[in-house]
Image 1: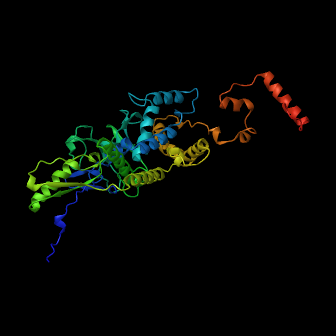
Image 2: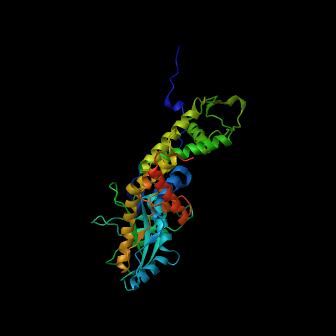
Image 3: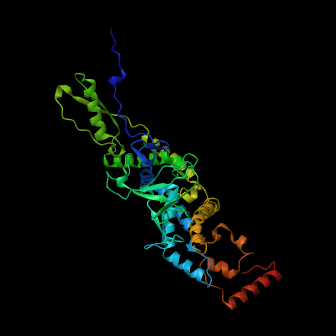
Length: 428
């Protein structure tokens, strides 16, 4: 009995989306004037997509941004000319924004992308900086580095059109060239100040602190797409397609597989029916695949990727909105977690960003700016912890009550004295 040998060519698996890869940064001989941000030069757009499509990621980034901004920008004002000029600059850092509005964009970019771009406009005499504008991060690219590993040029692509956006082979005619920020030269034209932490993997681009969770973010977005598609497609499981009849040529097989792939690949097509119009003798058999415990699998996978995302963002679970099941004192856990994030993460980030802004203030002969950080929440303390340090009225004000009247204070003191004199007396 002869057994037919089944080769790899007889079975076709449709490949869906590629796995998320570690970002790369390199030049392309066909686009030598800028450094590609990722293999396809579209990593910032992908990061923005994760921000818009993964709710957990977006909420954590917004929480960090809110904590960093505190209650706004301030400075030590005095009755002098320097204070008046400082206030004037803060109120109109450019033609459209205040310093608070500009700093809010900087903070969001910093936590979203790992850095931010500012356009610096010098005065005509080159002695001070007149205006600062925010530049959209995903539209900026770095130029080459010189022999000292310093980037001297940056490029801005203003287009929102599909075929004019940044790509692998963008040309100079589509972009605007800027010189890198310098206090020594080239002040007659706008400059770009790139604020970013040191990144050992490259000198060109910042990476967000949650870069290790990119695969988890991609998985999270895919799970959401898959579940949503299944809900709208009658919750049907996957299926196999078997073509019966004479075996087509290899080229014909490839064409058929490509047609199915192009029409039904990706998570948004999960569960969609497949329709074929064929002659009866060449019937196609479509068999649904057993779903098994797919619901439990997705639940476990979802929980796992959530944990990885939270860990990569360096925030406690309570701060991210993921409360520990069965844990008591959720409010206190949230307050304490927030204070931990502030001390170990937010305050250093504030210092880092303010150093750049205060260098500009110094160039202009203005006062340093600072961020107003709200006082530590009293909710992390028990009433017994607070009584030795706060007055009765301070505690009452914090929880929303008015000050006690003089008569009430006197009565309370008298009751305390009477209690001390008669410690065994039980009040009725």
